[in-house]
Length: 210
Image (cartoon, rainbow, N blue to C red; front, top):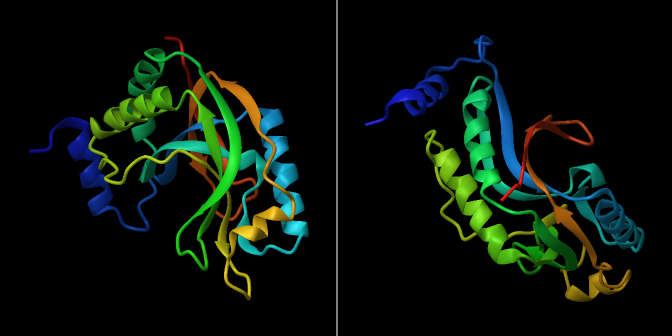
């Protein structure tokens, strides 16, 4: 049986009408941000790829590059103050992560992928553990756990729209994205603003202090 805040969140979501603005919904997710130089590095590569004629429906703004830990989705604004101390506790148990953005690949149908991503190297075991702890913090407030395996990546573009079938060789025009390293020292809750570019706003940050 649901109790406490978990039940309150679910009741709020199930009974909400479009006209109810007393506790408006906001779309949230938790992520590891990239450093400025790493964002610039990836942005330069995606620009070269786009200029080479590789079409995607949406290219992610460099300021929006991140590594997702937990997609929360639409939730009442009043939820964040309750979630923040749990995320802070989870973050404090982890040390900063040494990560490298390296390589590129796709998710989705082989001939028409839905996601173009940059890969990761470095403290990936620690990143997996951090993700599980963030997932547990969110689950304790009633948010459904993700049932798919966690595959950390940096989304660069969405939905291939080329007239010919996708082929790995299309990534060869600009060459592999040059690797770039950084120390991840925090996790961030982002608020999504649909229709804006960049579309993600920092709503809270929690230092990795372990």
